[in-house]
Length: 402
Length: 190
Image 1: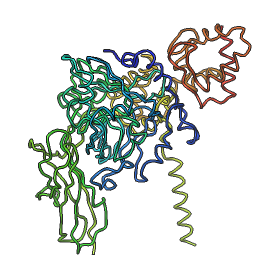
Image 2 (image 1 turned 180 degrees about the vertical axis):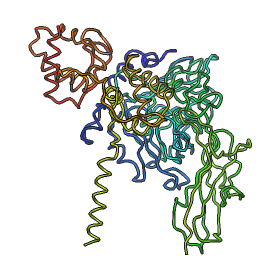
Image 3 (image 1 turned 120 degrees about the horizontal axis):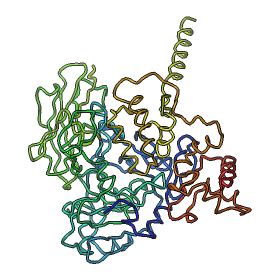
Image 4 (image 1 turned 90 degrees about the vertical axis):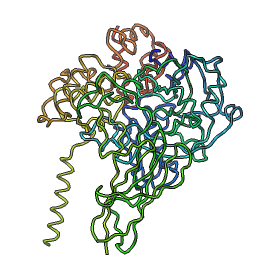
């Protein structure tokens, strides 16, 4: 399958998507209030819906996140969910929006949002989404790509929608089916930009936690998070969770396009840091085990007479969290943190660790999560040219004062 | 008094460092800087470049990805841009700023406008690239009285249909005056 928009979208729909294409090349140099290209939402309007704690890493495309200490929540609030566009934020009319199921199915289907809601069981689950490049700035040397801060680029809100499996089965999956590609209606900045198309293996598409979602935390999806409909592929790199979803195509092999082969890949075998991508690559899929300390904040001033509660979140894209340990002596010794009961399959878990300071001065904490397969967070993750899958241990230092 | 002087000194120092701090939206001058800025800015702010330090191989990969994502670049342009980026935004210390000897030297104001506004990314004088050749446009509207005004409007607002499904993107950064100059010039390219 080749990589033009039209190959997936077909004649008229393709022209429609192309007609949304705008040119934002002067947006930054000029007055910020300047209108966004027709059919798109300006960044300023997106930012108004986000928390003041958001840190933006780029404008074109728009990317932003909150650091760990601004993310001390069991469920990520919508206004703190990370933003990672590849193209522009489309202004979609939900009433006119359609989802088409095509490719290797017995019967091609098209749904309105109301039809999806009325036809299939509606489920709500908490699920982790994390950009493949989350934590990229921790790699040395710094790889190419969005400079996510060490603990930004992920979030764990609640999603409401229908199971992708139910919708695919309604269309009838042919025996040759192997991958499912999602495509949104987000337009590029130049007319020549191909659509962002990502495909996931059929097994993950049929996982009961993989959703076609229209709500985040009980409210319609915010526009920058995929309104009115998106894929949610929890535990996997965020790019699998296509926003502004309009087309699902069932394929007999992974989709071949720049967003499958040119990015979201890593070397099959580790390479020397700073080198280019080797010919043998593998696709990024599930996140390895990871955790972060969400309280206290870095360099917090704390009273030495009080116990310090170290709190954080731990998650893994495959399997489950087995335990989290905290070190208060730079990794010489480790103590178990207490772990909140497991919730939904791909939700992060809150851990807490109480510490009684024995002296004044600077005090650090390191957190290390283990999964149920014996994998622990490393000190440094394996360097790769696009800076994916940083899961090194998170360290926070505070001042213990009289 | 002493204290005031010290404060004034600090303020001056702050001024000096602000004036000399690298503007993230400005590339270091060097051979290829103009072309690099022009091409990258079609889709990105220049901070994507100015915050990066990548090896030549990584820049080669980066340019290849941008091409796959629709950046209109010839092989020769890629070579110039990679050469510039690998030198000035590489993993080794950068050379001193130098004049951009590879910048278009034409002082023809129309050529300058065409390059600065990104027109030449999609249009050529004689042959069809992403969009129609200027010559084709001039021939199509030859003898059409309202053509200049309509073309000027279309340069700014964009549109599709006249030349197939690929739309002309809107160019809000082109002033009405420049759009008029460009339209008048295009129509003379028969």
